[in-house]
Image (cartoon, rainbow, N blue to C red; front, side, top):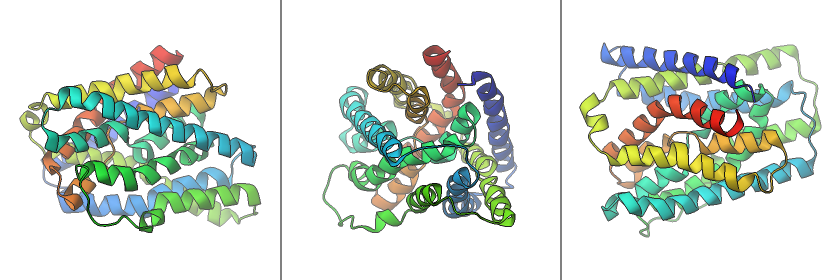
Length: 307
């Protein structure tokens, strides 16, 4: 694990966030713009990064290796859900908010922020491994996660459409390409790499823009956000490390699991709150505060655990 490279990458990410923050403050970026850019990233940037990670990869993995990593990712996600259900009621007394806080504690920004950090630590080939780990994330966010945000109440049936998520589709496509080893033209490789390149800067600019659209006093007024951040950014990755190191012998697998657990709250919290009637302001503050603090906690936690 190359922590020196991580510090450099986080500084770059912070600069991207700062650019978005300033642009929002001078009203050059508005909320509608951020929503449209996020759509582009969701449907083009993130799938392109997942696909491009296997087109020129030097990784050698068997079906068993991928199955092992997938199973470990399932265990990690179940543990994060368990931690959320145990710890959130301790500091979230308002029952109407508990489901949303559980969601923000259990699900991190694995795609937009996790992929670039994994790439910085283990190289671009490792993004494919992180993509395998994201499968249980999406399966659970679009099922258990929706129930959480709704407050555990019964609503419309979830159906199977959540399987059409672009990240899931591109991950399955990446697995197929990995094993088929199809020779592709240089132009295709270059196009995939170029499209993947938009993910990191634009996703961080959008996070900064969202921060810039909120008043600082509103962001820090709710003390529960700092309790959430302590749980999500420090307690959860440390517990995942302690538990998973017992049965995970592969150091890269363990590192990717811990990095995934150390990510700030998923931006899906805000999107789901809008769609399913939860408190959007609470979700937005949770995502913003955990994202901002994660720029410090991620290198600190990884240094303590792996340094």
